[in-house]
Amino acid sequence: MLEAARQFVPIMRNTKLILLGGITDREHLETGLREGFDFLAMGRALLREPGRVNTMMAEPASRSRCNHNNKCMVTVFGRTHCVLDPEQRYGAVLRAEQIT
Image (tube, rainbow, N blue to C red; front, side, top):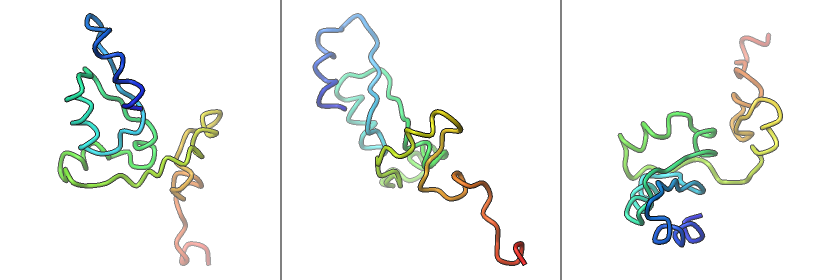
């Protein structure tokens, strides 16, 4: 969303601005700050990887596993989660020895 959002930075000088949309890695965060945003918000990337911020701090070059497929959006009517993560989708995954 950076392309659409950057138009507001010069005209909203007396307002703190939050950049939201597509922020998944440290490079995105740094770009948003350089562009003049006061805050940055993450959404879907945290659904996919709840520890994403800690990972970005420890491994600045790491990439998010979120692919922005929007399939998590329908989960807001129940328990919001990443549908690509079986543990989040179905609960704890049972090991073969637990089933037999």
